[in-house]
Image (cartoon, rainbow, N blue to C red):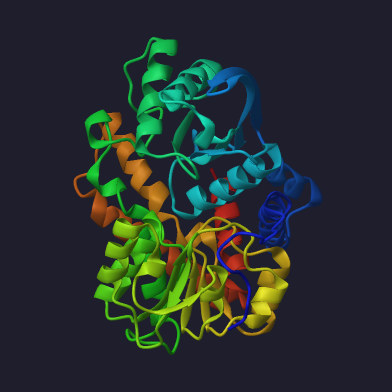
Length: 414
């Protein structure tokens, strides 16, 4: 037992600083590998446009001023695309870092999108009934012409979900006098969403793992530990379990469970649904972060940002880390893993399935749907992951450098 956390309480991670630093570092190493000039590198690091707004929201104990941001990092490839998060501690630096990662992700996936991200500094737990609809209405008016189907398309992120995207779309339509549903993706099916968008991130992550298995000495029986059992982690666990992988550890905010012989994923999912935590299923109980340090062939951080720092990287007992969540590793964490010979599949390659699914919802809303969007998602995620392994081998660099170089070439060549 490594003792890296008993649940999430008391874990101090400077997420914002580490996330922006990680994003900028990733772009920089890619630019350096391509031998770009300092001016070219600085241009890649700078955001094209950003919007900061403030408006009043009625909380249960009275009105309060709420701040929100939308950053369009690079629009060379097309309209911005990226999620919108609600969190009390979100700020402009965090949003900028996330938008930068989206630029790399969209380019690597070959999508006609630039990178964008948004955030609202709000504790949604304090909102009264109808508070989310009120928030979406304010955002729709405040963002106005800064976003749109051909300008910048929103999507769900931390703290938001399908209903928030539907509410924002409705508010934006009313504000702009438009009937287009294509201003946001990740919507419910009855509000312009599509079935293939559900589970898209997990499907793409599973493809990343399958490619990694093909390029290493691991096989279909490789064991997997997943930190996070939300929409990504739970579906990924099911997909990998169906492929024959023993899922030896999972966790959520309430803690983690471990069984070296493999957990019963359906029982874990039922426990999560019935009792609220994976810890109510059978297995050795441990802290949420500790699941990352159990012995497993593949480890997937699929929850927190900046969770794998240098100390935790030294405690890993794995061969491959597949970054399911956005920026789960700090710069020093990645350096330590690389020094230890641990292969790291970077987030903007591993979790690109979500934005590819969003691309298909956007195309459908525009009346330009593909014949087989699910197959396109599988093909794109497989191709992009194969490309970074090929480039890494050709250039004799790690996967992050290879992926960043390919993504930057896609941005510069647009």
